[in-house]
Image (tube, rainbow, N blue to C red):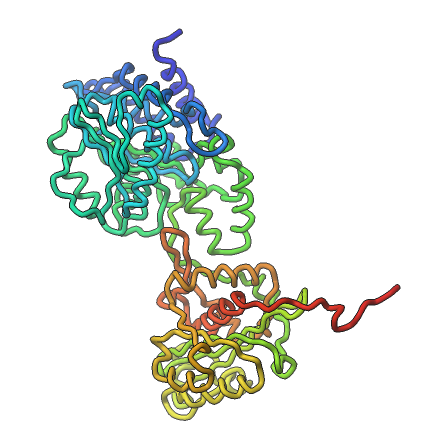
Length: 577
């Protein structure tokens, strides 16, 4: 048996990738070609491959055990794609015998074992890399995030008799006394980043780093080490003004031979054709065809652990949701298929919205429980006041009654400027024009008062920044518990958007086919943060979205206080056949 069993595994993986037997994207193929080319001519640049070092790093994972899921307690057996990355990063050496790669960038879709690789590499650098006084850190934007990888490394140590003999476990610290080495979590909010002397840094979810401050500190703290390793493992993001996008682009340039950097290893597992890249056909100058994200055959390109580490059924459920909602599609592309997306996306699916166009009879809703939302824009702009009526019986939808207000004097100017038929909507009764060139808030208050007489309005949600001028008068109408401040950020809006998504896709909303509201639904753009939270993006929405904002606020309150539903039989009785 060969002393280097992983050599055959890696060679087989490279052959499968380049022959197409294993679907792989352009960047994975380029990483494989780079390794093969360096085996041929790397010696001209003083590079050589140390199979002993490569096999040692892979064998080290055999000392580790999984701590979660179906494999908890079982020894880690690296898949072929994982062995390829470890083999290449730890096998290549410089002329002086030190490790060639000082930075490594691994970008892959979520749930493909990133934490296992990261924690295993961290432990290797601590205990098996031959570095006296090694300082190894799991680094992230927050201490809690940094603890995720470090906690996994700690569980690996506790489960390994061989490692327990050498490593002492403290809270947030793995320590080897006789070599004065340590492995700790580290973040940008740590008390002090001065005095670091880093041998290894494992940077988790680099896409979440809003600034490059921590990265720069870590990078400049390796200068006195013989062969430091800086490993970034991440899923794709959406902000292209970040250190992660910078590393992403740098990786692509190296893999396509635009830049030669013998100290940098990078690989990206993603779909083909979703951003500008070189053709996989050498020299033909063609642009690769965009992979169909719904085609399960290409999912493995971004998920090399599919069907082993990552479950296909879970992806299918998320893909089904992505077909229904644009916001869910962006999330699926970024997290599940490792495609860089934009933060903003048109949010309301037209077909589902149209299916929710049942009539809303204001008179027929008299006496019903309702929850209000109030969105007051600038006093020269559109404002909206809306009521959501929770279902009273099984099968009854949430009904949304919305009122719009606009200053009368500047309507024609707005029609010409915005090319929106405000004047026609005023004539048709969908918008109320208030006298003057600014919104008369007394008209809105009068409408709120009138609606409170007609309906059992339990709460009104409002943005305190917009409604500050009339907050006192609103309190006079309903008392202190009647008004609910509703922020416009992710914390308040993301749960509301998930509820609205549910009722739109489930066709359990009736919006009355109001043309002003239909226009605003079409305009609504959602912005997403790194954690997948959503909020309406007024700055980037096509035009006005006030009626959708009031819907979100009112629906949120309605779903939090939904009354018990009556059976339809309570109203009509049983029908006996």
